Picture 1: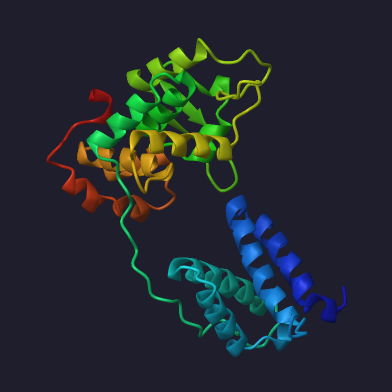
Picture 2: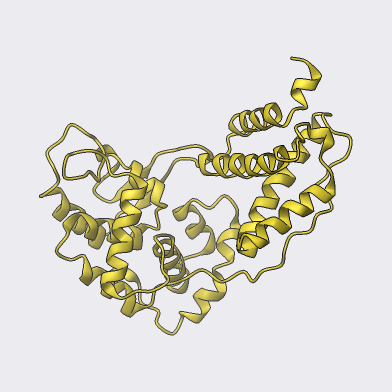
Length: 289
């Protein structure tokens, strides 16, 4: 490949994506980085700038300002800027540019909000809202009792469900682990299995037509029950946050919780300690409710 081709934004963009894939980055990360770099490249293309060596710090600053004018949040702008910084660091390491145009561009400041943790009233309301829907009742209970990621829950297969534990298969950058399956979650699953659609699919959660439920299906269904339960400004991830905080507040060690939820770094789990201390007055495990 000619050097000029490698230095074109189009080719560099594709090579960057290939590099991320080989590095084992999560699919969501690759898609986000790829889209952000493409958005930047498209803006430069309008000015007939097509080479990585033509990009300047002023152009990155201009892109940052244009995002603000388009009403992107400070957090979204920071994420996109991080994508560009990663992209140009990659190019500099490969010797395709002499100077990194994004290195000195500052991230916008924004307030990092603490994780949303459902109150006792809220998660009880959510359980009540989906009580007559065995499939979603099982989904909600698994989230609350195991702290699984939504992608992990969507990938669960029948063989992964044991009598007392669940096997979480390895995927992308996440290694395999097992999580305890307590009685409330087991009971909810057994109730769902009684009405589960007859299908050859090995996926635990399937649609009425027998196809595996996709992440977007699960998220949409949970959001629907959030609305029915009157729970505002909550997401599926908040069920995972709720599990983590309740585990820590009930006395489970930080390292044990780290393993249970599959955090790569202990520091990620430790960020929940302050919230757990605030919950200490309740000291009631989710399974006891």
